[in-house]
Structure formats: structure tokens, C-alpha cells
Image 1 (cartoon, rainbow, N blue to C red):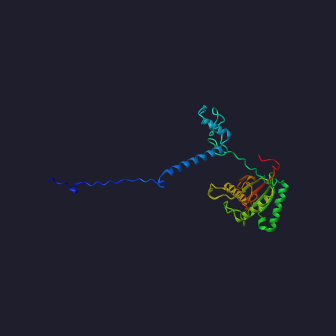
Image 2: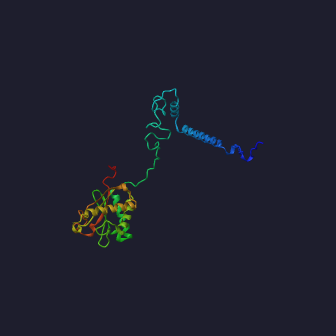
Image 3: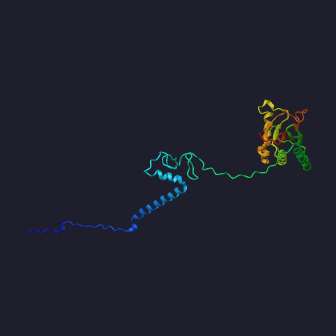
Length: 284
């Protein structure tokens, strides 16, 4: 009798079937369509901008550039014809309100005209003299101490206003160009008077004859020039128009107010000359 095969020796085979389900909500087709739509809208807006930013002649030049039936010049693209037109990026041809190849600024826009400011007229020598004497009188009524430091005299160039020192009331720190409160107060009053006319002025610094010790390199010439420049800066800060300044200089002790006493305090002074020698003539 033949022996029957055992069921336990036969292999068991399991077949698994892979089922693929497609769902539109989880696929990528809509993303591709959306990307195409965005690209098309970007191209559309670029086209609208190009049409608005160029002139009719430039648009014709661009159209000629992309027309394969017309021979195109190497620099064509923005001119009126394809053969000899000029590019939009050359120096002379611009897109509307645009720029050329190396131009840094946009097309020049006309600047608005400013109304001419009304300025005081240049005064004659007599008018300046009367103005300064009136200022001196008013100052004398308010403060005798301030009026003592102001002297008015004539010169071939115009009227000279001398702001002088005294032993008890200096205009600057000793041997320095740092101003005292007295000078600040005086220059404010002087500037108010200078504003009533438009003459040019000259500022000159003066010192006494006392030299610096030990042959210092910084001497009275340097000191007088520095003091004149300090007065200039203070007048500008008080409101003086810088264009009115014709000269700022120092003369050391070469032009003393009191020649008989070269070391006297009044020789240390600031001279402000209101120039009247060029009234009616333009500046050179």
C-alpha cells in the first residue's frame, strides 16, 4: 500500500493584492494647474507694465526685434526702425521717466521757483552811522556798562564799530580766544542792528603789545585771528547771513586804538566795519 503524502510538508502560499486608490483631493494635479495660473498672471502683469512704461516708437522697436522677417541691427530694440534704431539702454534713449545706460538720476524734473526773499537794501554811510549811534544811545539808556564797550568811528571803507575791552571787563579769557559772557551779550545787540541793512561787513581782531612768554610759536597774530573768527561764528549763530562777510582777519598789535599806550586794555578789541565803499555796485 502506497504511503500518502503528509499535509504538513506542503508550503502555504499567501497572495496579497495591492489595491491603489486614487483620490483627487490628495493628488498633485491641482498644484501644477495653480502654478501655471500664477505664471500666466505674472507674465500678464509684466506685459501691462511694459506697455505702460514705453512709448509708441519703443514698442515698435521691440516688436521689430522679435520679428524674424526683418534684419535687425545689433543694438536695435528701442528705436523707430529695426536697422538703425537705438537701444533703450543707450545714453540718449530712455523709457518714459526712466534712465539710460549709465545715467544715475531719473529724467530731470523742473524745480519749483522759489519766491525771491525780500532783503534789506544796502545803506549809505550816513544811514549806517545814524543806525549805530541810535543803537549806542538806546544801549546807554539800558546798560551803561555795555555802552562803554562800543565805539563808532569813520573810515574810508565805511563805518567801524569797535567792541573794546576794559581792565575790569574783558571780552576774552586772558591770552585765549574763548569769549566771555560780556562779548556774547554785546554781539547779540550788534547783530540786531546789522540786520537793518544788507551791507557787507569785515571783522578784524586786535591785541595789545604784550608778547607771549618764552618765544612761544602761538603769538598775538594767531590770537587776534582766532578772536576775529570766534566773533564771526558768534554773529552767524546770532543770525547774521554768512554771505555778507567779506573779510575775517587778525592784525595783532599793529593798529592800536591808543598808540600812546600799546599795552592798554582798549587795544584788545574786535573791529566790525560796515562797508559802504561799494554801495550800488554788484559784488565781484
